[in-house]
Figure 1: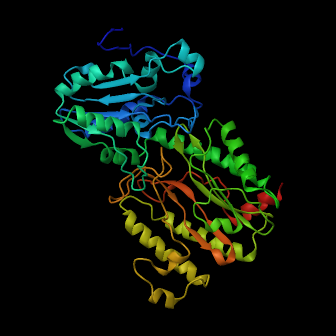
Figure 2: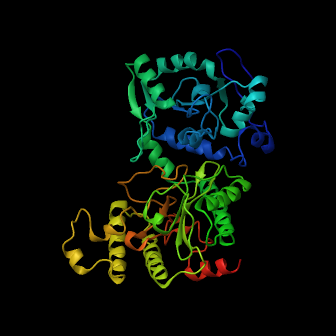
Figure 3: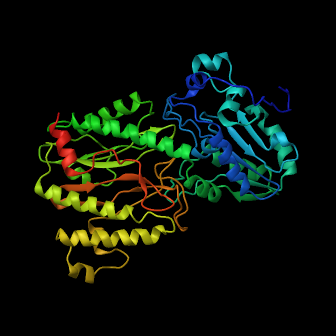
Length: 457
């Protein structure tokens, strides 16, 4: 049934809407079962204080210049809690609200025929219910009035700040503007942080999420396999990027989960090389740090491929050393592990391999600065990070690892004086017992596999 004005809208739970309609509205990917978002909201609400509400905003559509904008990317938190993948949306959670219909509310940009012609159709209220499993849906212009009603009853509010350890907060976001407004309009309310709750609940994936990440990894695999028949001396890095982009898009990905690194020869020694504009030469290796997204979930892969199809003796020696480190490191990703201790242990494994390669010696180790061990000269970055809706996903760094967390494992050795940089990376799901499950186990990784595929073209 429907109520108008400032009252709420309720949709019969038996209403059904076809998946194809939802797909045509605003997404390339198959509609995700709303049960995931219902469960995610329960997780968040369970950790809220009594008599508090939480508010989550969509991202802005960011301007470039003139009337140009960046493609819209939804804020991962509101997506995680609702599945809504469009701009100008607001989610309100108020678990103890006296009005049961106001315990979960979606506010959406009102759609109309004009918007449908110029921008494409937006979610209507029925489709929002099907997407999020939220019964109460208002248009965005009703938000100020409803918010006053809710804040009159609530004692506190959860505000959603970006507390990722590597966040660049230079650009003000829609959430930032909202937080300023709330603090100005409601100064007597107690403020709580959503971030600690979101970091914990987002870090442990439901099976539906693991399936979505697996699909992103499968699309990445298709892209990489395409390259084995394409790469040869003389090809340009940007041509390789184009091949991957083609394969990702044709498999219903929006494209790369992050800016791709296509680094040939000495470029591979630049950790965040993204120019991708050099010609790949005979005898060089190409470091590919690439991953497709699917339904906003990321994959993150690194492989090294010889331009001419064959690893030199030295390239093979260093490659296999990195591969041994990865294989040993991933065994440590088990429940109870502390990430700080994990990275120290991986450092010891890498130290042993660098000694074998004669890149460091025991004197280097004896004289090393404990804050910057000798192995850091050739392996200067971390081994693992959380993966999920963000490539560098949120999660607690000072708490033990738990089952169903997803991590990358990506050791590397970089030797600028040899023009050689090698990194190998897979995406891993922590299991309740035993070694993690490798979501990229079907993507070629051994030297022999790669060479066979390169020469099969």
